[in-house]
Image (cartoon, rainbow, N blue to C red; front, side, top):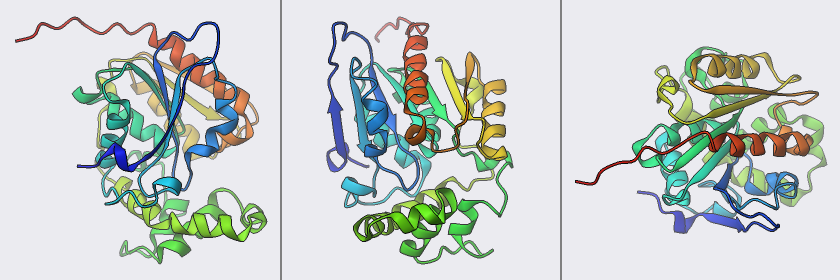
Length: 272
């Protein structure tokens, strides 16, 4: 069982005239870290937000053991939420995590979810030419050296020029995240869906950039069509890294998920 005490969690209390509302949890994607939401968070100061470095990444580098299943990441998120009424919003891999968490009985305190271009290889939209397949290595599925895998993934997703501009200390930090990256990419390469979004009972807000890759856009379209009470948000001019390049739009997306949480009323239960 994972422990949230091992994770680097940053709590940002609401700062404004109307601080009421649910807790907002932002979950980062693969080879990323909580600080990538910095520009978004500056636009959400009136909300109570929490971000954390997922297991094996950045300040949670030494939070071991690494998760070898998507369920492990979901468990971490649920422990961070700790039963509090919350809105969970994830970018990329983080989006798959928040969806999985909201579908579990243990995630009943999640009032609304938001997911920006979550990867779902089981839908068939991912081919062997993707960054995930490139990282995972040859056809036998054996991953390459994790540090090399991290560099390769970054170059593929962000660009060679962006990698070359990183200072050496930043390159070393990304390479150190390679073990977590390889583990979680292996965990999500599934032929059978790990959860069923058609049974989701809270409002779902999905988002995509109009400059994003076709497979990312198609997954969001599928989710919007098959998830009950789903809403689609388009980011003009954005690609996959919209939380970095379009913080205003991403913050508005988060706020929309918060607004939609008001539509969700938790059923009254009778104790035994």
